[in-house]
Image (cartoon, rainbow, N blue to C red):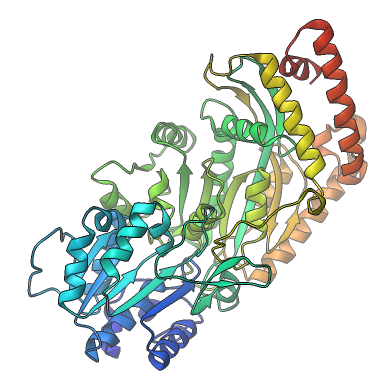
Length: 563
């Protein structure tokens, strides 16, 4: 690859790389290249955080291997149709011609290879095996964890690319929530007897943050009161973020995301205010809502039009024009895009700076890929803002953004003695089982979200938490939404600390009689230890059980009446 070719590269490439990177290759890309060229391995797994430039590294390496006649052709395997085309466009800019429309038969002589999807390989593995056998082939497996999405995809990849001369596996998140082995990935057994994936080169989010290659992320979480009707017909009320069973957390979460309640409009309004603030420093900044399904996506787009007076770009995965709409949005200055899953991974829209996580998917892999849409840095001082429901799993992922993970092939054994919450989990499971027995047929009615409201809960940044609860539209919430969009990371931290101090001081001046529980500082709210909470729950469950036996009412109904 020549130095002059860098002038034709996309924003993801070094020629137009963000502040603080080298003129040709970023330090990590150069380091990974040197390691590869020195070792010349057949298989190489590069783990680099979303937004760090995996495409650049892979195509630079492909160019080197073609130039030195180590390989004669390139096959890129990507998760989606959109990404397949994106790879072909990126490769063309450095003189590697890939056919993204290839389906069968001989390849045109003008092409250096093909770009296909994992699903495409799954349908015709022998076609790709024959191609790999006929000519020396480099296979680039983009986001290779997708090869473990189904047993058939993994088997198809093994069959198709077993004869390949070189295999380069790329991922931003080398972990899965299941234990399906990923093809061409090495697993090493640790001292605990558990096998974990082993990368040849790793460039994590923490490293990329220190190098100013990615943006730091401010997470703004919202709780609120939820009310819903279960399949058994019971009405349940609970506060999002409070200790509950897993089922109750899931149902409260679904209730929050229901577009007919007040939670989603309040959060979208807050996110739009945040976007307005960010656009003062980054005029073309865009926002994205990641929705659970198409019906919700359409409803959220309608809410955005009502809130802002402008339409949102709607991206639905089964729509033939979806890829074109993403491209169009990435190049214009429109404010909002709403999408179902397809924008969660690999799609390069560098101007996205504000996100709303409005899906109930709670795997660390999906969360990391979703947040990865907002971290692509273009200039020094940019920050990303992601709005979340106050759900324990999501808050945990947000606080562990800089943690590097591996794919664990064996599930660790979890004994009761090792788990401090085991007793409580057992107790709650017992209460759930008892309720199920009392309520009879569980599938008589569909789940129904009845009402919701939103409360600004806290801000998470750099592993620390700031702020205390405040009502939407309040001065305290506006303080956090109004943080400038262009700041150095240490300035963000300092500003959040000042905002928190001001919020606490303001709250202390208000007499308790005039404040509700939300507005009281933590030191003036009732404090209950985990042990006390466990004892209280035991008492409550036994009293509810006794009353249920006496009255014949189901447990769920009694809990609702008590609330």
